[in-house]
Image 1 (spheres, rainbow, N blue to C red):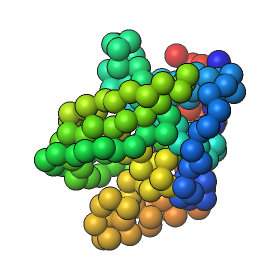
Image 2: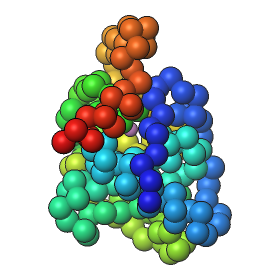
Image 3: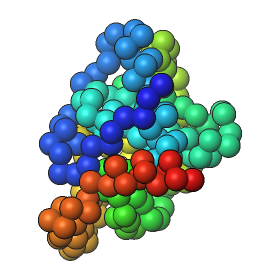
Length: 183
Ligand code: NI
């Protein structure tokens, strides 16, 4: 297993429609294992394949942050079947380090997907699970969470990112790696 480099905005892969997975082979299983490793190392509760530079409809999530094995889930070719109600809460994204804002999402979402062996299953998720599945399914569609906020907030976030790119603070991969090793 390996920790992969997380692609940051504005890399075009993040805004590209992911390809459907048709082969459930060892390559896919390795990608999923590496994505879990990368997500836990970040740390984060969800990570989609475009965020590691792979334009495929794959995401991993664990809303328990590694505490509950039942919540460690990989969803291949996710499809939102139903949503219900709404919730507004703070959201972040590993491709936007340090950027958080309130995003309105459905309170409940039923998502159908395939596992790494191609078997279909559904998750009926509430609150954080619903938010996470919707955020990650969006990634598979090339839609970013900044598109789910107001134009004003989006503009502010983009301005902040531009400043951080200019000052060299945006690509923190190396520093984070070093910080981890120091612990
Ligand atoms: Ni994200």
